[in-house]
Image (cartoon, rainbow, N blue to C red; front, side):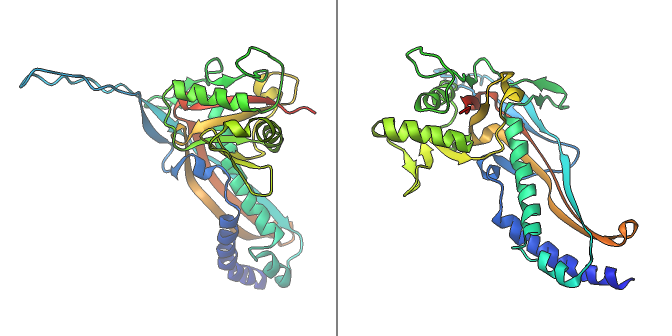
Length: 309
């Protein structure tokens, strides 16, 4: 074994331990807002049960009325992703520096893994979901009933493209309430532009009308509003890839935790290798393997917001 490889092997457990520390410090913003669990095999599957009603009876000793369980299935498929960097010069002192949890390279790889989880969750919310026992039946997002239009300004009927406001959140809440979606664990995922718009509208115009308004002290950052916990994530999809419009439109998301399933096959794996074909440079590669899907169509609402200047 070469001296380079021997030195590198000594750093691998140190690097893996410190990467774990960095990863915990830079966790996914959305991971805890959805139903997250481990993945195994070629896919993960779970039942989707519609709500059921009990049947009243008056006859004593009569036959029990059994009904079949009408269940569909959600499916999550793994999608591996990696980040690989090549360190052009092998230097023991430099390697020791980048192995620290606070090093920029370590932080960069940890953040990339966390962002990948957020990316999978954001895209799964409105992407085609695959249903059925075999996971082959495609179910598109309901843009007719589960979307708040970009030009919605309130129940008075006025329409014009606008950013996130009090009335759009009230509308999203109404859609979830009408579908009897549980009130606990509801989240609203927005970008920085929507937080600014919302603060200007709610704090300045509607704060007296909202009982559960929570604002970070000393800021205009809203953390809770109308039963939603707000999460600010810049991974939200924007513009014509979402709506086909030419304006700068963000596809914000209102959902209940059980509506989206995230499964992680490989949370994070770090590889350090000597690359003989690259003049024995050191290769650093981080791998994550995860997937997500929309499990309950009625519990996800897309809130379109114009964020053009």
